[in-house]
Image (cartoon, rainbow, N blue to C red; front, side):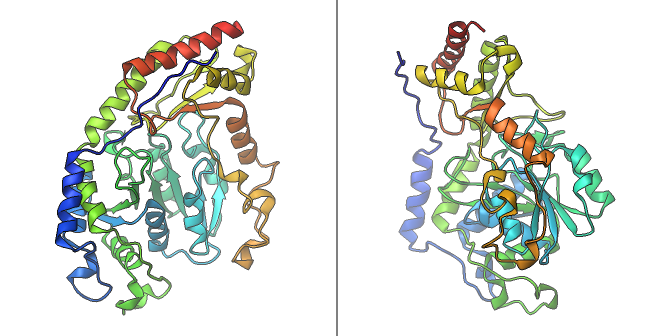
Length: 405
């Protein structure tokens, strides 16, 4: 019989955000942007204040707000002046924008294998994907922790490549005592509703490279309207501007980030303690030098030890009411990439490019991981307290006992 357990939805909003939003609305100035050569090209009072807060928090030279992290990724790829046919190596274990931001500029996403401990790009397989057309590596810091940037940056330097980090899910995490997102040429964060801090929809792009920052500013705000610089000729501008209400809310949200991370880390630590001895169940592993902010709590099932499939265990957990998800989205299941299906692809030169096939190790690895051994508990969705964590732990123990594992 299913145990009816209600979990509190994660909500980082409070009186501070309401007050901040109300204050902006009272001014009647909901956007401070103008797409012409003036100070307003860079946004309004609260946008500038938000960007300054992110610069200070993450100790970077430039923090540029955008209306979504998808927009931020488009800005990041575009800032590198990717030409049609250029290749960017990217993880397939991510959501759609990590690859479509490459396609938006006529680039080709080249999927590489992931580290099955961290779920981030595995440096050991990157070099074999590099060709004369490779221009960059787009790293996804998935679930709440970083990839191995020491090795990835070493490879990038060897082949004169740029590195972008998609740190949408890992804001506030660290690698060797440096914030994720700051360990590359361009990084950034999502302020989407599911993230640790958010304004509904929004994002922040960060970089220490002033030339790249200027490209991002131009792409964000209809750059072709005012830019006469000949070096900008292969870029176009969009309306990726963040509103003043969202900016004001995000300022208050950033103040709460450390507290939110600490609570999620405490919940994850307790859960790991309570279920770590269950046979065949592997709790999240940290990459060397990493901290984890637990956007998600990924688990692996060793079917050789449990003698039951992940699907069976997953269904039993659902019966009890445990908050588990069956794996994670992966790009190799998208029609646009599947079997190199480019019938409606906008760029003809890609049609003969083999991105992957079912015989490709990348395909085999991701499909196997998602369908057979990966589960996750969405820490991003719920505000778990001690009672909730104990219930989740009991659910796992109950299933293991029922199945005789």
